[in-house]
Picture 1 (cartoon, one colour):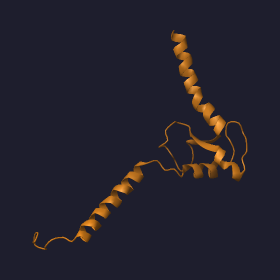
Picture 2 (cartoon, rainbow, N blue to C red):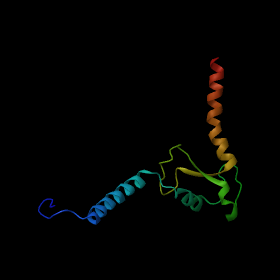
Picture 3 (cartoon, rainbow, N blue to C red):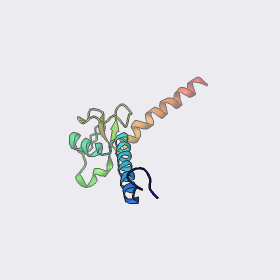
Picture 4 (cartoon, helix red, strand yellow):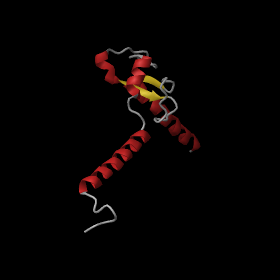
Length: 111
């Protein structure tokens, strides 16, 4: 059974064409996702030190350092590291809980 001028497409040709489309879609999705390598970049730029409490970390303890986005936007990852600060896990938790505490206190004042 013929389809068009060139005959029926083989399954391999169809799979190759689908694979190419899938690869393109995958690349587009990856481009839309914030880059996760910003952590390594931040550690290289700012060093293995908490910018809040000043605690210094060894290479073996680097997993205890987190990267805080100063503007709160995890998609804002400039190569120069201007939106990042390295915080130990304690200081990072403190940084994010301050907003929660402030919201709580505002609600208490309104009552």
